[in-house]
Length: 114
Image (spheres, rainbow, N blue to C red):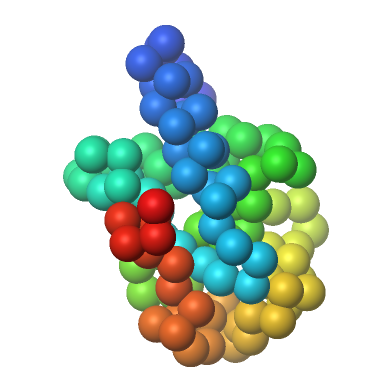
């Protein structure tokens, strides 16, 4: 059973991608922070669907979007077993047991930054 997207979903997804593109190298944010930034605070899951649907678009750094506790909950949507972690580690982000170390320090809040 796939996710059915209508025009408003597509528009929301594109808005999610525009925020995600602004996440600085070596920093991370959460699904909920992006949702809140877009005025849809209760739509963190929809942001997750958008990240999954971006299909590895190179212009969208989906690997920088994690859950509110800094866990790599979306890693199974990346090719290979540890691609999400590898991409983060290439940017200097330390990950142990699917958890970002120093999450609070690395957290980028689009509400404050934009």
